[in-house]
Structures are given as structure tokens and as C-alpha cells.
Image (cartoon, rainbow, N blue to C red; front, side):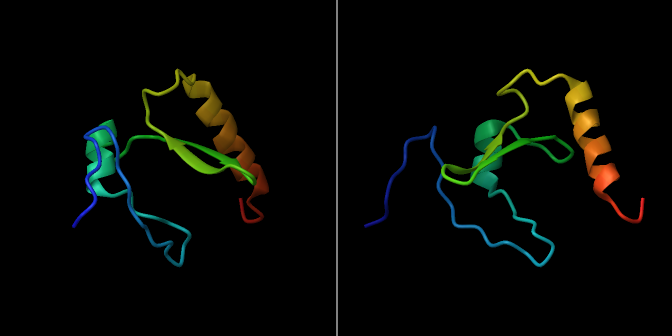
Length: 79
């Protein structure tokens, strides 16, 4: 007997690739309207785990993504 989840829920086991990437399963992408090119906010906490928030979950000003990109570039030893 297969488990039945409500329409507003998704559960999946994903594999981390060699570059640290994961694929967000189609049912989860559809559930949140995630499209190619969308940005997601990743929250990580050692005790609580990792969460990905869909684009419309928070009103995050675009400049915050720029600040994150600048910080990432500053950590790049090649850049």
C-alpha cells in the first residue's frame, strides 16, 4: 500500500551530485511554481537542517541577492 500525501505536500529522496547539486523533484517544483531560472532562498541551520524557500515565500529585496553574490565572489580565490 503506497503512502498518500495531501496535495499541498511533497516528499522525496534526492541524491547530491559530485558538484553538490540536487534536483528538485517535479512534483515539488510544480507545487511551488518553481521554474528554470528562478532564485530560491536557502536557509541552513546545523540543528534544524536545510530549507529552500520558493521565490514568492518571502519578499527578499533583489539587492540582497547581489550582496550574497558579492560575498561569494570575494571568497573566490581565482576571481
